[in-house]
Length: 259
Ligand code: BTN
Image 1 (cartoon, rainbow, N blue to C red):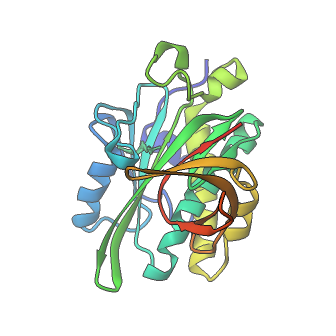
Image 2 (tube, protein in one colour):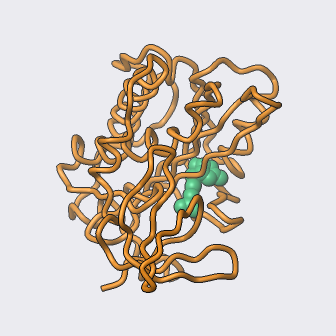
């Protein structure tokens, strides 16, 4: 059985990041790491601060949805203070870091479903919620919230069973959550610092998308569109070719891959 202590001391041991995870705030149980990270950011927490919990009692997903966060999973939020110009790239940084981490640690082949769900064999293993506080042209802070189903038996959770998977379900064994967190923070550190230094994460993100070239249904508010996911733009938006031949740009929406 892998060790299961997510305390700052166990994560910090052997963590070689420069920015992300230099300050770690741990809770055995918390409503939502994103909510707590916002409060910490407002209180002036340094960039790179990580809020992590063994379980969340009110985990939040995109579009006001609930995110189930039982013990055995990973729920963490990172405080960053980016320039406005690279705010759209945070979804790419976060989803790529998770995909790289899963390849490294579990030797599985994850794919990213636009914009930032991470899938294994077509099922969701990770969700990402980014929340910003923008004042005029300045980003006061952005919170990158990441939830990964690590050692969870998805069969025990009927509400997510049809669409979700976990690393332990895919591997048939449990893995060390500390190693997953350390590896994830290392990739986040590298990708985020490269972005800040003027590098691009767009190409690698685009090349890892499961969505491109696929027939998709996109739900935007109450409207639904069907078409082919033709491309993604550098600002992260999806270019959807509709059946009448027109191309529409989708900035935010829920994508379902059609078979
Ligand atoms: C989604 O797919 O809808 C996004 C899910 C994001 C869940 C993570 S878990 C850590 C952080 N805290 C939250 O309350 N939500 C995010």
